[in-house]
Length: 341
Image (cartoon, rainbow, N blue to C red; front, side):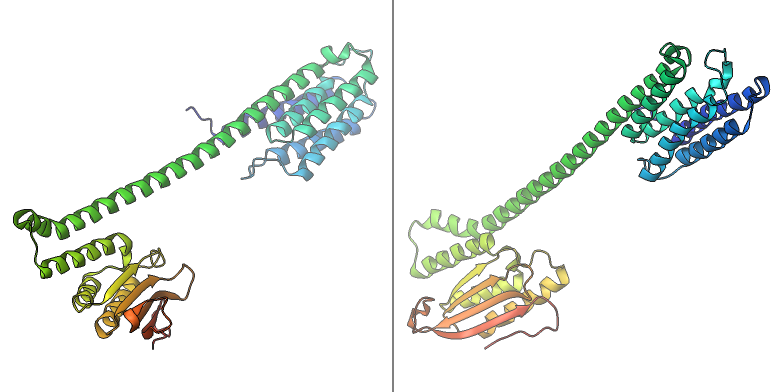
């Protein structure tokens, strides 16, 4: 894509605007009006408005106060200059104000003040029509000024539409990249879980295929293996070598352990997560509860992981006779209070 430096556009606009000032000054020398002061005031007003309009800023849209100033100058300029001209005479360069107003309104249109630009050239056309008649609209260049504003309007609208489309495409690209990253993460995690499951299950599956019949100890080992595989699916971030070892030890003594990771610790850094999971492993090793439920808390909670251990009455969670053997809330922040009983 070919791009034009902004400074070059500003320089061209400044040169074009300065040309109108040169024509206005030369008209004072070639066609001396009855009083030069209205033309001088018009030149000063036009120069000030042009400099302010072309002054480099980060904001593309012209401020409203500057647009109002340009419109006021565009209305006053024809009145000041034509007050010293004869509409029936050949005024030559003395009608420089027509192109000057057209240029000023074109700059306003390019800087997204379209209403001001159109009002300015329409007022210029009306003033010319009242001052010199309908033929003067073509001979003085008013039609050309209107055409330039129309071109600037179309270009400004096209560029604004392109900018909006670019923003939409950029947002869509970011969303597509985020979706692709999430899919890659899910795929990687799925492969990792599959590899972990294969590593756990392959020896037992080969043993089953070889022997056909299993002993009671091997059946118990299969149940523990199934629970470990279930942990890999539902436990996710709760699993470390220490936690796996503690869970396995608890199951070997006959306890039922359930790990539920609901994403509550996904946003923690590795140091904080290791601290929390080390405390979890210690709690699992020290408890004698018959049923243990480990669950991550919701995001935004001060608690990272909740551990509940029950004993008695088959350790049923819905049983009124179950006794709470362990209640532990591991905080997200180091040094915070962990409630345990």
